[in-house]
Image (cartoon, rainbow, N blue to C red; front, side):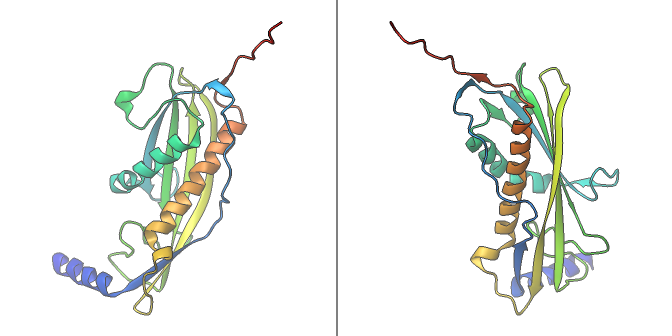
Length: 211
């Protein structure tokens, strides 16, 4: 019975269009330039993705979602120019590295429905006309001694409209919406962390004028 239900919903998914739109609660930001620093902090980033209310004991970790977003996170961190060496692999962490703890909680609005759009686009119960995924993201920075030096969080969301009257659009796919929201949220947290002087940077030595 369960297999038949899943197959039936899979067929409905194939025949039904959906379109996702970001709520843009977190604005796109420009990261500060750290090109004037010779020595940038090396970081190990631990990344976890949960489904459930933020900090709730009942929140469930979703490894599939984490693994889908890991390559994008690696690119964001590497392209930021904020760090020396960046790794998301705990076994590659080295003494002297900062530890950045990034957590994402996917949860519904109060009394609303959630679809986790970028994984399925549908729940396995009732297919609503419109459902909202909310994403609360937090970033905690620990120094090489394990002491917390900063902590911040933000919130954004995605509305996914579903129904046979929708035709999936290249610019409004669930994947594109999640990618855009995820990038904006991560960059906003990185900007806050750096502007609070949470990490140590060493400037280039000034050259003395020759006589």
